[in-house]
Length: 81
Picture 1 (tube, one colour):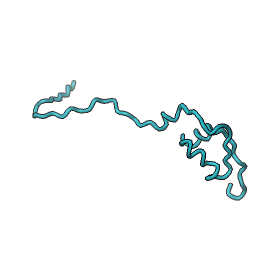
Picture 2 (tube, one colour):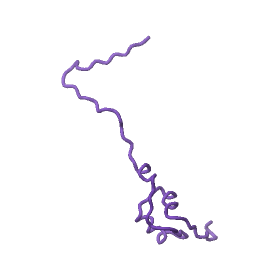
Picture 3 (cartoon, helix red, strand yellow):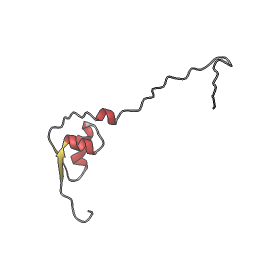
Picture 4 (cartoon, helix red, strand yellow):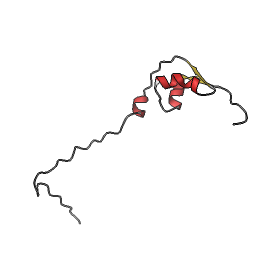
């Protein structure tokens, strides 16, 4: 709370990496100096299998629309029952 101090939170580098939304190694190295009560345990280097998925952008799988050159090249018909 704001009146009483919290006890330091000690966790592995990989756990802090997951808690904070998969930041890079430089951001995690700066974490103990820039925040209060954070203690990093374990090696500074880590291998996170989820980081690639967390930072990936969605790709469209549709083929790009072909631009027609002449009127009447493409005809679209809706069949209604």
